[in-house]
Image (cartoon, rainbow, N blue to C red; front, top):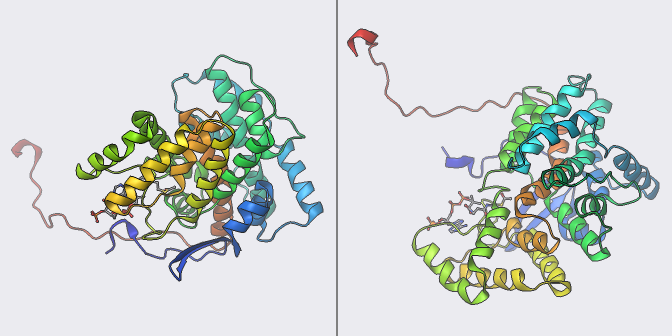
Length: 372
Ligand code: ACO
């Protein structure tokens, strides 16, 4: 038995491929290299690719962008929910709860025709940023800013969050970040979604399972922990000592290590490093410089390499995104991968039900309660 199902192949997929070839990590979405997609495509194009399996033609992309934009606004009941949740609720708990509530409002919740499932998937992809931005505005005592149809998915989120049109650099940075977070084969949250889908649970239930799983600090929750570390270290000069002490104490450095990318760098981390450096050049270099010092020390003391969550932290900080929204940004990208996997599971389903190796006591004689 492999602890943590390491290297166990649990399903077949045509959505993404991770491989280590000639000492280099490959990550492809539907056969396209992540480096090309990040540099040359926009997020909506990648969502189309993940859902439909092919890159859109120009007119298809235009129609798809309009369709997603038109689905952005939230029903009044969801806005009511966001108003009633306590302001200390973690935004990922809010996202999970709002997804569940969206399911309760959907009269066709259990209709699983291809058309209906795609509609629900596009709705969730379009609405995730609105839920996140609205909740943040509401918890900070400000008016919500309705989605702007003319803005891209990335620009619209920053606009709804900050109340002003983002710079082209900020828009492109978030757009690229969402592409890099969109899909990653059978990671823990996607697996959770596929397990739920394999029982033929509704798509909202599958996404709730995935959202809850993504929150954990060993998965998507790591970026928020990275930011905590950057704040604690506060200066590049202190990074080496900090990392050395953590490693000596047997503690984990958040944003480093990966179950699949062992001994090779996560290709998403390379691209995010580039983004972080670019944003730093136009704003504050502080977080990027501390990140670089941590990365150097983590390699020096334990040959650790950064994962997708490491440079995301300084990217988000330079975009003015509050620390506790970091996982939500991840979810805003990954919802496209989750829904593509849910659709794939529905379309070729067999219940996922593994076995456990029993290692407890056997055949014990029952003792009546009066005699225990
Ligand atoms: N800091 C310190 N040491 C580490 C780290 C780390 N971040 N990651 C792995 N290691 C070490 C382990 O201590 C172990 O060392 P040992 O052989 O001397 O005992 C070795 O590397 C192998 O580690 P495992 O625990 O077997 O790795 P596993 O595949 O189980 O865990 C995980 C992967 C959970 C991502 C791990 O690297 C970790 O905890 N990282 C920090 C949290 C994090 O950044 N999570 C985000 C991952 S990316 C994502 O989900 C989006």
